[in-house]
Length: 125
Image (cartoon, rainbow, N blue to C red):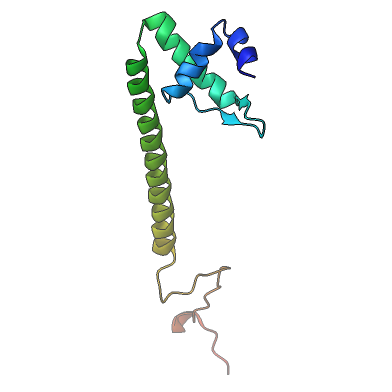
């Protein structure tokens, strides 16, 4: 599959082998040891090629950029986890504030009957 990917991106297969050797790409392998490139691998390759071709970044620089990108993605996952935690806590506390412990929540309105003042009552004779 390496030759197909190399042809698709107009690069030499040795370039792909170099990127793999340097740890920039990590395609999985089949039982026959053929490289298997996922869509994620191909997106990563496109990113690498853009850095190299368009920006002139060398392999060491590409490695640094990829590491920074992975760290940023991890930080983003952690931040999202924190946001989810805060949202859950806020909802739980709002629920507690609406239903304080010791009080029974009212499911339906209750009619309150009061006695009329003595002056307005009919006197029975």
